[in-house]
Amino acid sequence: MSVRRLEIPFLETEDTQKVEKLNQLMDHLRAIPIDCNPWPAYQANVQAKFTMAHNGQAILLKYIITEKYLAANEVTNGNIHNDSCVELFIAFDDWGYYNLEFNCLGFTKIGYGADRNNRKLLPIEVIRQLSFSSRINANSTLNGNDGFDWEIMLVIPKEIFMVHQLDSFHHLKAKGNFYKCGDGLPQPHFLTWNMIEAEQPDFHRKDFFGELAFS
Image (cartoon, rainbow, N blue to C red; front, side):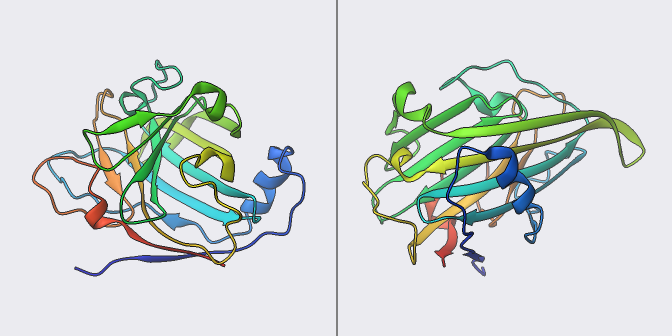
């Protein structure tokens, strides 16, 4: 099975607090589809893509989603995967990886560990260093059905990856995967950027992470 590789461009930007300005910059980048459905028993009216860059000190990540149903019931470090949810799983070494999960309102869950069962949630005061803006539009047209367009722009500073104490994202090599899910929606779905081979939905398969190369 081929492994996808993503080159993550450098964006010259000093002020990471102006999320809306960064959001506009991200619209000039090529959008990457989250278009693998490893578990075709779960079919849903969903389209998902993302753009990603870095400015040395932070990851800049924007998800653009269209889906029929929308839910946002969870809070920080809750079961975000049950909501309208986008995720980034990223590893900077061979031992552990971070799972970053966001619902359409920006509520966030971040954990770290070696596998699915051994996860430690990051403290809320660390998660608060992340900034975002989100937008939801109702009544989009998706395959002739009413639904929702939503997007979320995330600024993820290097301090979020507290186990690794990164100096910079410049020329960093990592592995990871990008996901769109909604376990608790009327149409549950589990879409991935890099294909996963597993019988049941399982995003915690670091053996199927793609390659991430920060410029």
